Image (cartoon, rainbow, N blue to C red; front, side):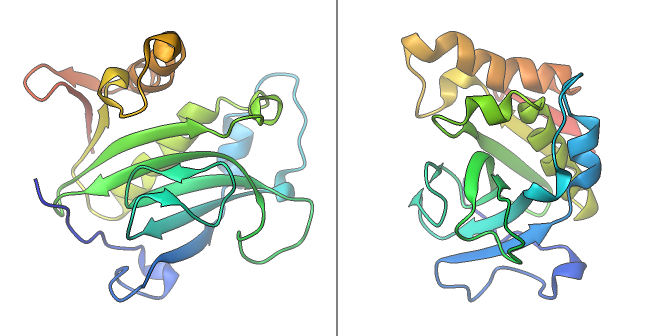
Length: 191
């Protein structure tokens, strides 16, 4: 299946990622997501966290240490005590990556926490939060369906990671209202 150019929300000033050479990063307000997915009893400084919509022409490492992009598009959760206006240089905590194959759907191929950042991520239900951000973005941009691959279909799947990856992909999708499509072997949510 051939990848398709995704649309961007109108409030980001451009209609697509067309013409961008390697990376383009957009800072998105996530204060309500942070509050809604904060674990009970945890306290954070909301202004320290950002989510960035990232486009990468090629898979690989980019501006965020510890994040290998498995998909062309993604949201990267970052943390910084600085008042930076852009996300470059901030500490990446986690990401969710997806590809677009048509104007009708996106397929989430990556749900990754950054190695060594588990203490920071324990403040949130981070997998559900990133999935919700991605679903809301897809809905706001007119996509009709969001798919999530199974853990065992990830290129990073290994037996020693089986349980944690199953929780991250399969269980997160199910708990977020996705259903399993037996024919495509993917989880889906109609928007």
